[in-house]
Every structure is written in C-alpha cells, then in structure tokens.
Image (tube, rainbow, N blue to C red; front, top):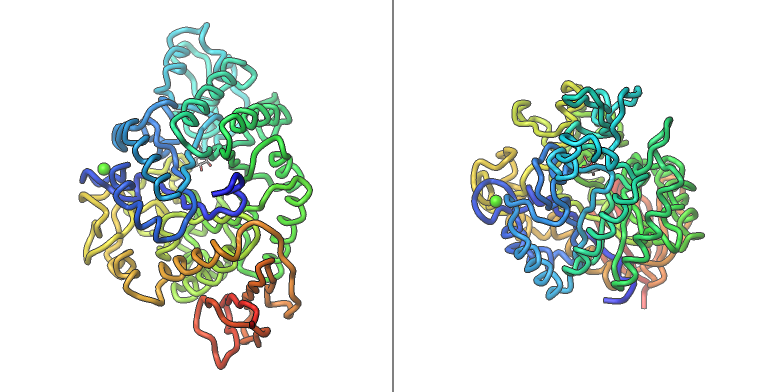
Length: 504
Ligand code: GLC
Ligand code: CA
C-alpha cells in the first residue's frame, strides 16, 4: 500500500465488545476478532478502526480509559493485541485505534492521586464552585468530591476532563502515541477532538487545540505512513477544515453526510460543501453512514424523517424496513463512489436494523441513564453481531450475549447472507472490490440528470447514478457494473444506485 493509503481507504469500524467473542463469556474480544480476520479480508477493506480497547470500568463503553498503555482484560492482553496487529498486517490490513485525550476514567491513576492529594489536581479541572455547564450526556457537568471541590466532566461523572493547560498532559499523550506507534498501529482516531481546551465560557473548538495536533502530526510523521483522524462535530465547515490543514490531522469524520436526510438537494449540498471545503487544505473527504453512536441506516432511512440528530434519535418512530433497506443499499454505493475514504461500521454490511426493543433494565449507555430515559441512547446499534446459525448467540460466542440479539436475526447472519447473491453483504463485498480498483481518492464531475438524481463520473470513467425521485429514470450510456437493486426495463427505479463503466 502506498504512503498515502489513508486518502482513499475503506475503513471498517470494529466495536470490539460486539464483534466476536473468542472465550465464550458473551462479550467480544481480541481472540474473536483475530478469528474473523479472514471475513474482513474477504469484505475488501483496507483498514480496521477499533473503539477503545484499554483497561476500563466501562462506564461509557471503554471511553472511560483507566490505563492508556494497556488492554482491557475482558478483551485480552497486550501480547494478543500485538499479535492481532501483526496478523492484520500480514493480510495487508492497517490498524487504527482510538485515543481519548479529552477525559480519562475516575479509575485512572492520575485521578486517583488527585482525589487524595489536592496538590495533584492540576491535571484535571477542579474548582471550589461549579459553573452552569451541562454534561453532553445530560445532568450537570460537575461532580463534587469528599472535601467539597468539584471536577468537570463533559460526559459521564466517571469521565473527568483533563486540563490541557498543563504541559504534563501534553507530554503524557505524546508518549501514549509513541507507545502504540512503536507497537505497529497505523493511526489514531481522536475522540472528541475539538473539546480539549476550556475557557471561562466555552469548551468547543478553542484555538489552542491546533498546536496540539501540529505536534501530534510531527510525531506521526516520524513513524511514516501513520494517520490521525479527528472526531470533530462542528457545524461550521470552515472551522472544521482548520483541523485538516497540511500540518495537522490527516482526515476527520464527515458528520454532515452522516446526518443528512435522504433527499437529493440536501445530499448534493452536503457533498458539494464537503468537496469545496476540503479542497483548499488538500485533505481527502470521508464518507460515513453510521458508527457506534448513531441510529442504524436501514432504520433511519425507513422513516419519513430520515435525518439523524443526537438529541432526538427518533427512537420508536415507525420505520418501513423494506424502504429503509432499499435506501441503505443505494446510499452505500453512493458513499463508496464519492472521492476520499469511506467508513463501514460493523453490521452495516449486514444491513442490521437498530434494535429498539431492548429491555430497559439491560440498557448500558450512560446517555440513556443520565437523560432519565428520555434519550434511549446508543445500545440499539451496539448489539452483538449475528455470524451463523438459527438462534442466539448466532455464532457470536458465549451466551447470554452482553446485549440480547433479536430472534429475527437468523435471516441476516453473515453465513446466510454469504450464500445469497442479492444480500447486503454481497453488495458491500462487490462494491468494495470494485471501489478498490476504480474509486477512492480524487475528484468527481457532476452530470445533469434532473433535480431528483445524483449523478457523477470519476477519473476512472466510472459513473455513479442515484435516483431519489419517485419515477424511474433513463440511464446514460454505459455498461452496468453494479446496481443496488433491479432495474425496470433498463431504467433506474426510485431509491436505487447504479455504477456504470464506459462502453469500450
Ligand atoms: C465520542 C464517542 C462516544 C463517547 C464520547 C465520549 O463521541 O464516539 O462513543 O461516548 O466520545 O468519549
Ligand atoms: Ca469474550
């Protein structure tokens, strides 16, 4: 793979707890992941991004990190992690891990020291009086400790925020990056990347953060071919692309695309805005339809309101599964054809729906608990994957699984879908294989086919046409390489995407 492999990569997101369980305790782990590497190779991805695998009390699914240089024992050992990196590399798959610099865990040694020693509090935000900030998960952003002081946590109380005005925090994370680069990881996904610095009045996108990423870029460059990917949720695209200047992060997630409704004018607007804001900084765009924090696409696209927003989540709003599936297939081929890198969140390739009927007493997401249940949280997109067989745990591993799987998933196991040429899994496999040869990094040229159609050609000559209108549309000349659904008398039906190559 080239020096710039990340510019056009297809990156598969592994939520380790729910991917595959190797030791039979009902929780996914490194042994399970290693055993399924051939599946990922067959899927045709270039890299894996793993959610946090560090020792953690799991107050927020591992985003509460107790030790940045270790592996959570439930997942395995450091030696296994190294073995996994080696095995992935043998298959020509890169490995990206999560780093969580905004906050740690209350179990982290530094925080434990801070609790007992007032002199050791400057690594966090301790104050005699809290301000009125609210936690992103709901409730106040400050919690009081035994001696009366308060500490800041933008997320759960178990996740105290670091004080990035303290140089020791900088040194610590620079060392953590080196620790993992030296063990062979190819990059980091940076959690809550825009939140590190705080002023009296704000905690979002303070200018000081850019110096941190400039330094991290220098470190990454020392190791060669390594990549830094920001989780940056910012409504302002101009502010967003500052993170992608040539000496800062390599790429960042495109949440505008992820949140965009299934409407042609809005999609066109978001795609154009993405391309025009990324071009001046020279960073490749990313195309993301889902991740471990958002509603599964087949559920979202089957609703009359197809947007995504964290606050509402539209939990329980009726969704037409047939329609949702059809649109999710069309969206997948659209996302794969756009210039830049593409992300696939585990289970997206199986077309899994959001599981909305989890028993409340089994929900684990702090977002659910801290909102007093008004926000149903993110457990519904984190249910363990169905691999094979007719009943739970569907080849996942031990039973019971940490979240229960719906009985209906017998129809959508990886095994069942591998045998069905028309399945979502086979659409992803074929799409990713062609993408590897014909798509990825570059530019696009729009074709004009009416207001309901998104059509463009890429450098390789591949043309992608998505019809979001009700009526079928006539296709331009070309040989059909792949379609997300059947054509009607040679025309492209509603909610369908087709890839065409030029006639030779
Ligand atoms: C990010 C993660 C999310 C986590 C939060 C706090 O948004 O994607 O899962 O809860 O940061 O770390
Ligand atoms: Ca396990």
